[in-house]
Image 1 (tube, rainbow, N blue to C red):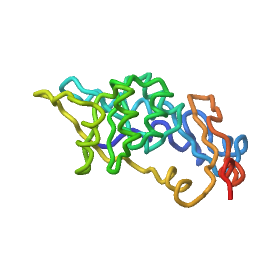
Image 2: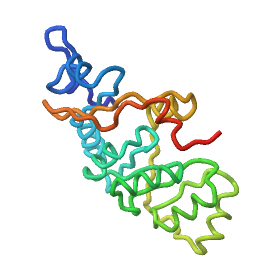
Image 3: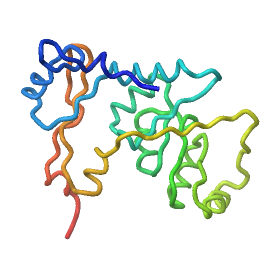
Image 4: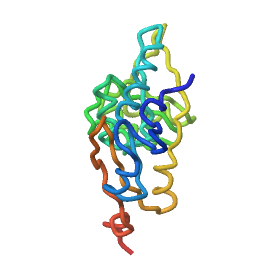
Length: 203
């Protein structure tokens, strides 16, 4: 299955466009490097996935792919749920307005604090991915709901999340992030500096 990109990202007379704005104009306005997102592509791909479902289902977006609150909010408004792998991602999904009943907590090595946070929020489910997790959950939750006949969970590839890794593991300041909607563009996260990246840390 291929998702949609060509409709929003395309050439016009040898100039590359996102929706109705040329990337050269966005570079002049916001500087380089910058991540450019097409709102129509994000929502169009989600709608296409949703349209392929043959049974009632919830499509959960992997927050680690892009955890920006504006992107999460767009997907939440479209009806998406969220797959989180940390307490921080859980907090972001909730901050973006996600209903706890649409959140799946995946990932190995969940801490007790993260498990407790998920239980306290009332999330839909945990994916148990390490031997010690059931006991950790039971110690806080008591009796947990059983999986019901007909329940279906499909976990797809999370996609490219080098954006997150580039900062978290390489101390690389994040570029600017720009969301394009038709002929409008807005800065949704300013360019990060090393000073901002290290703010609040002590030596």
